[in-house]
Image 1 (cartoon, rainbow, N blue to C red):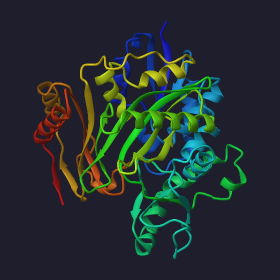
Image 2 (image 1 turned 45 degrees about the vertical axis):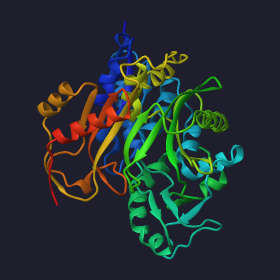
Image 3 (image 1 turned 90 degrees about the vertical axis):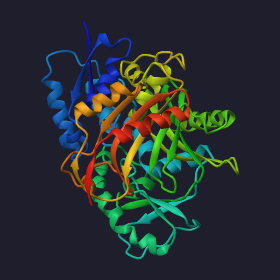
Image 4 (image 1 turned 135 degrees about the horizontal axis):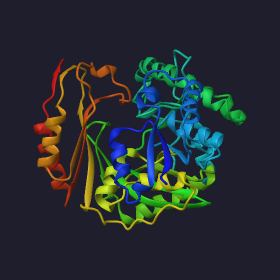
Length: 425
């Protein structure tokens, strides 16, 4: 008999990836709420939890696992729902220690030195100053956000003041729902005093950005892959994610793994996948931990599948079923290298036409090892899209597998040239 796996915000692309797992015939995957319900506009976490419970309670069958791969509120709803139904998951407090940016920094500071100087900024102050002893340039970020929303690069006091309106807009949308989750745990006094009308300020780290992915179970922390993040030239927005890492020396990757194991253990994150973003400065050879996410990255799922033959969703699934994650023999996929590309536009516009399903299918059939996902809906003004960073708009996500970086790039270029978008300024 198949086991019933409920996935918060299960979407078409990730369902197809789950169904390609070697043991997929043992499971029935069920969508638990839609991604639109979970992440569009300002959400009410209690209402979403009630809606999810109603769906689960009305299900005529066993509930064998609840899991999710999206950011807030999914990453926090999973432990709440699993606790309610007696299913294995990470603890909510440990997840919050990862996802609350200030709390996470305080916990990191106890066990590692590889973090950037940080402080707090009160959004109710119309004349803010940089917290001592920080110096420009800095990044300001809401205590909690998704998809880098509200993450702004600031070089002086004037830019700091000008950034307040955008920060407040993000906090107004996410701060209230995040506070609803924080109210479910006993917060340390230092965290309770912060509130959600506060931003984190961090000195800007420089260098090559990478993401370490792994899992923690039974007190054992394992790293299963490292992904390079490459930005558009002169921009902070990502051009592509690339796996496996080729841009950072092996000994540095090993050291990142050591730091990751130390901090995940200290945070008490158990029975969970995770990803940790780092910067590596090739001049000073210093690494700086950027942020910790108490989930794996669904953006990397096809990359792991293309290179290793098994998507990283497999680790999430095994943990959700309370078993040790399967052993994956690395490099057994169809390609030695894979990338997820972001076709972006750096100015606003009205989307008049997007590639059709038939056009996308023709591209994927003609260019081997590619998957194209159009993300900008026809008839939408780009500034109205949810989940965008502060500087650009994603039109399409393009996955490519190849022998080397040149082949990855060539396939991406062929896809872009074939994709027919019409966007009016």
